[in-house]
Image (cartoon, rainbow over all chains, first blue to last red; front, top):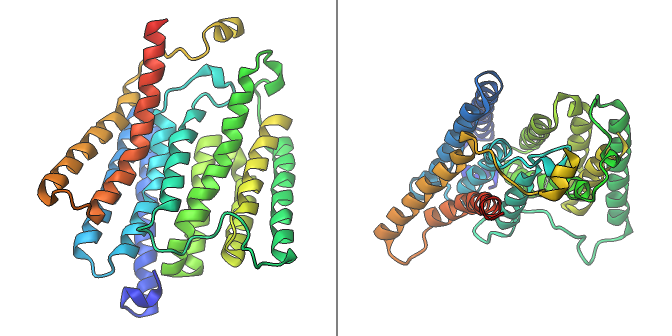
Length: 269
Length: 75
């Protein structure tokens, strides 16, 4: 949604966006606190309530608001945040997947991200998965650099993030590779959801503030799943990919970077 | 432990209440979808599309859960 589509002065639009984002962040923080302090079940109920509230707000926006499709799309994209936390908390845990037994959440989240990315009723502001046919070598070089930087952050993270469990190669069976593949796929899925779907909508509403909000959101979901030790590498990666996707409107490099980060983190630590 | 996991890697023996939270949300959204369809008929409104997008991942999660549980019970 362009700022003019909101029919208000820029400052008022930004203020409204910031207030809404703060209220949303406070709700998510409250649900996270409930999940940690009271229990996973009550935390999942809180995230489910936030998810339902956003879905109903989006429905309401389709009927009542003059801004229509754009606001609906932004609310739907924002609802992916509590949805991911709900999936992480309530997906069946399989010890078979080794280091992250709840990694099955990647499957429903990945499918809904693809669904949202390809939805025709969303405003067509999404970045491309591949590079445009008429783009030059410069874009290709930027994407390759981002992927390499993601791999570098993954190697650094593997040596700096505290971890006391067994190395993945300790397990003798081949089942561990399914867990590793899902863990790596989680990075790709998150890039598609946050950089591919949420960021363009948030950026159209609030410009750089939207990018910042989206970056914070992606760091939050990653750290909530992987643990606070992963905060520094995730902040570095999210900041880099947010800017690169905004400037180049191409997702390939950031998806490769996040996938490689997760892969090297789980293999090298 | 490792040998046990290799022998039966996908068993979902223990059910916890948290598994049923997304199923409850899914039922609620499906009910609402039917109410919208009853009101608007076959015309697929924007509200319909919003609910479809919300239902889709929860349905996938439910199918995963049901498949794992069915596999556990059949073995």
